[in-house]
Image 1 (cartoon, rainbow, N blue to C red):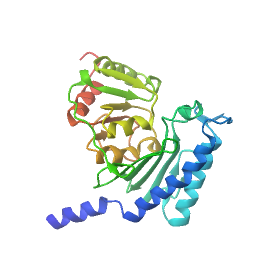
Image 2: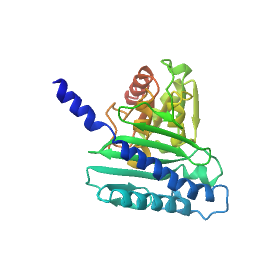
Image 3: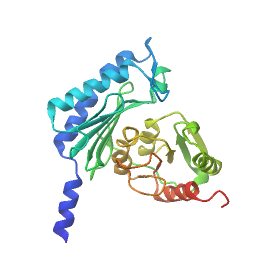
Length: 272
């Protein structure tokens, strides 16, 4: 039994060479993004009305080329250039600029998200802020680091004293919007518009709770190892582990008590 558990744990760990590649991918994409930041840039809109720029597209293209060069058998899922070999055992999940609206308005609260899935579950995640030079790295079985130094979430079990963040209240629809409003009404502080940077701040002990909906795999895959490796919890609204089959609803908390409190409010009946 002990040997079996050890094998399972080892299987879930991220090989060191893959972590090294993830850092290389962030190094490759960073200069592309910095070159366009706070510069005149054309903004297009995709079918879902979200903005995209040449910085998004070129950064992802560079990342994909580096992955193919290193591991041509690995899969890739990217926000801008789609899916290649999505059924592979190892699949890289890329969001070149998570927070394009912040990027195009000159605010450095966006990030490059780089994740590696094994069997549909995230085992490696990087949140890279190429303008400020901050890089959070999380890997299964290891402590999360910020530029090589370990970081931790903070303890907060009282929702009335919690700092809550979400990208935008507009991402919640129907019953989800009502649930989020209930949660906001009980939180001590509510802020918006930080995208992946809010999860980085949670992992570093400045934010207590991040709740979102209508997320795609490339929006949350990299966040899982970063939050968990810093001592936090991140699941869907039902408390299930996040992965390729998740429905896009996310709860991340620095404290297990905070996570449970938020989950109960989000899933309670409207009359409760």
